[in-house]
Length: 249
Ligand code: NDP
Image (cartoon, rainbow, N blue to C red):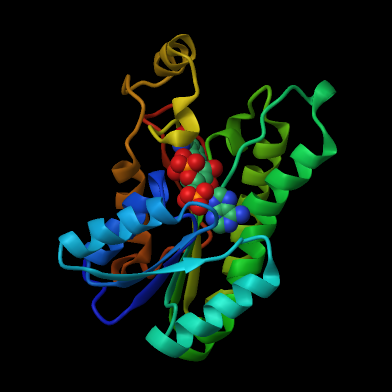
């Protein structure tokens, strides 16, 4: 799979799954815009990892939930590098707590970043893709959007919402040969899951037929396929990358 001559924007590319996606797309020849919001040193590390393997990338600081910042960043990227031809909506946060005690701010923050951010970023790039009659939008959902999880009503709602957004966008953009798909990871070893106690991690593993947590590279491999020319006849789909934890669709 070759992405020479294309550009990608990966939101939340500074750490975890986003970093693995940046490195993987760059290894396929894509010029990668690494977005971050608050962590420039982590974003620099992603850029170094891209460059160490001979790839090309650049940094873009913006908050995915701020449409003014997003539009300015996409405009600057298009001017300097073209595209983006590929958008990976990966930026995400959690603000966990039981619903009875959950503050509205925690609901809003998670919905704004995980769901509205995807709407804002996709809206900012879709015109260019439609003009080109080629594009790939890949939204990172979660197994929690399918199974639900106590303590994550905000996150579960945002991640389930992304699936409806993905399918509706896929229908709107299909006439211009722009595909829109989702990847729904299970539990992956990143900063987001590092806070889970050993006990909770063991309980999760017990629910995973393959018996382990996943690695960011497992998710990146699926994103790489969805970004490629070869995936051109897939749209509105969800790839579940979860070690068999959830097998429905
Ligand atoms: P991390 O917490 O390791 O990294 C989060 C990334 O998102 C960082 O790059 C962070 O940037 C960025 N980010 C957060 N808020 C914003 C914002 N407002 N604007 C721009 N960037 C932002 O997360 P993971 O790698 O674990 O998760 C990546 C995605 O995968 C998320 O959408 C998550 O919900 C999803 N996912 C993760 C799973 C897991 O088990 N880890 C399972 C299922 C889904 P900065 O470094 O600047 O803070």
